[in-house]
Image 1 (cartoon, one colour):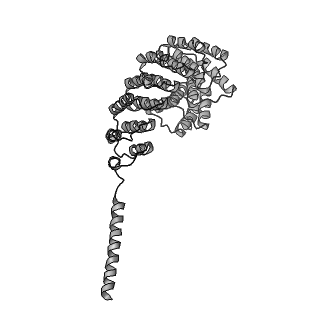
Image 2: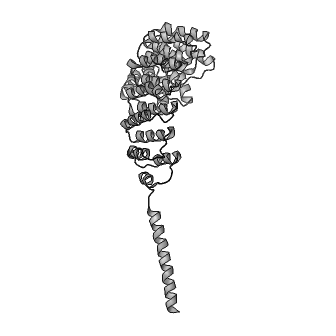
Image 3: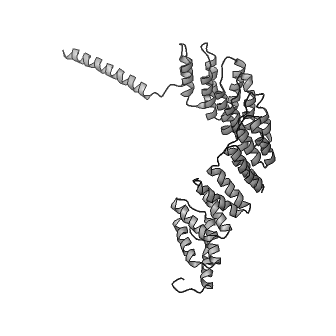
Length: 382
């Protein structure tokens, strides 16, 4: 009986030990490497399973290696989703040459239907992540060879990125390619061109593009006029910029806060301080709420015209709206009040300045002390 009990106990211990070893070995294993899974996968591999291999690939640098092994299988049937996963992995690895290789492979295989969205993703990677502007443009031009025609969204993305990166030398060439790429010019496209030309100082050419709106069956919007006005103001062509307000009325385009801000800023910087303040008053009457930069521009206009009373009122209004005037504003108003020997208001502005988190500089204190010493004041005022 004792021998039988020992044997049974030994058998149970062996079983427990085997279970423990199996559990320990399986729980300590990391996720299987996708390459090993692919090599050991004898069964038919579905497109979804193939994509999952790329999504679970820990090292994106192994993407092309995995693609090579996958393409040698009889069940290899690439689709857009798979190639998107491949390209996204390569972008993570910053292997942009690899992306070019995959694009050439797709073209040679000619067995995968792609969409504009696929190319938008590739173009976005080249343009934003890699900074490869030429590759971005080349991919756009190359889309028809894959039997895919770019949409306005993809075309306009390329144009806008060229404007933002100041590649002004190639913008017109890309814009001119719209016809052969089958892209229909829209208002967004024309606005991008106007913005780019104005940024480059080619306002006259921008005005020519503006004339294209009715020819292309497009309607200008507030962004169109804002870009043109900003460009004209930069060149000091204030009257032409202001005249566009009349064209806005003809086109039934309502001025928004940003446009009015451009107008106020442009008028002030070109010496038309009175007009900028009048425009601000009209803006308030129409119920259009100014943005912080608008208040700041109007504040500078009051200071330019030495209207310190209204400047102080505006500072208080800004503070009540949790807006903080610039340090330069406080410097100008305190300097002006000291010149006018208005110590009472200097005191009020100083308090507001400190409340807004500014510390007066030594030069500012010198002005104030000099003003006090030059003025016949009582000890209490000092």
